[in-house]
Image (cartoon, rainbow, N blue to C red; front, side):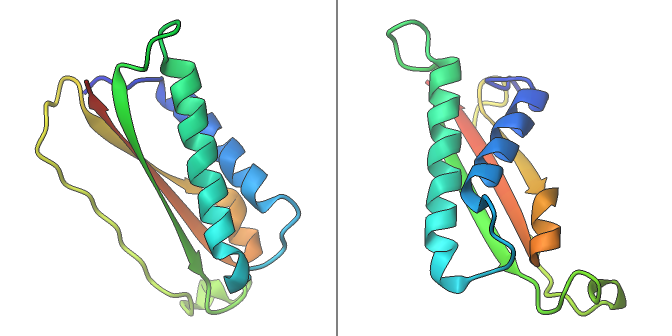
Length: 126
């Protein structure tokens, strides 16, 4: 599958978006979740479009970004005893394997804030 950018660059984009969204946040706050997700998604989309557009033309891909924020039930220190909330996410698609694809990322910086942040980027060749 042809990725619009190297995996290392996708990881840098996703990490930067998460770090921007969470700034100095120390813990999960339900009232802020919608804003965090919006910041992550919008920053990733802006970066992808900017880095893959060809001159004044649109990128050769359409993008879909999903951000999932999961609150831990217990502190990270207590997590080793198995007290965290479980989560599993999958994606499937019917598409052109040569032009379309998807990539998932778990931001490790969220662990110390009592959360898991999972981002997926999907691209569809146009």
